[in-house]
Image (cartoon, rainbow, N blue to C red; front, side):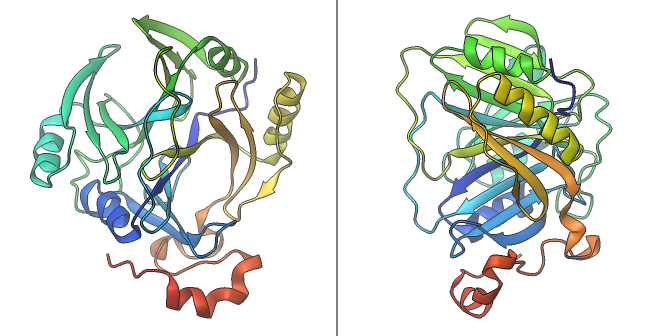
Length: 310
């Protein structure tokens, strides 16, 4: 069993409108936009990052907003719900805030003893807020949401699968431990993790396969401290039979990718070098930052990328 993984690093999804996406995460959920850059493989599309003050691992929600992209269809073989941690007693505040904003799908539930509030994002994205006592991570305090009710970061994600056994075995190799079952749900926890350390597997053998589109999670990334730890994880995954990419430089972290037996795309991302590598912490997410290979496109991209107003 590996011990290098610290919990989630980021979750990356797709959206249909950059301005709507930015308004939802910064204006409604109160996260900080920590980077405004472009998709490495499609530079005509933004890559937007939202998180805490510095973009700490375990807090970062990222999006590729493809203009007018058709909505995805929920099903198996995907991350079906992204869960954020909020302070104990904060759900009444959030229910009123989300309801006032016209958010769809608002519903309370309880999972493994945690009180939660479920809701949908602008493209039908599945989200939940879970009340967590004593989370030491600090919410972004300079946004529209008071710090005493603000989002600390991720709690975890739910994966919807036809069969959960193979993915559970993979997660156990990665350091997770099964801590409970409730009907078709299996909960795995990375003990001593970064707070974003819960994975729920939902078994749905009769459900159709998911079809990717706006509102779909593209991949979920797990955090390691540095490139040395990443190399160790990659070696273990290869020995276990996973098809893992070479290490790829993503400017703000180094990444490797592989798919679970059920088709969910996983990434292992380093803490280093972080989001302050090309702009001061005080000004994160303000300027358009381009990967070196796309720097020559700046003039065109500044004219053609849709405006984002804060």
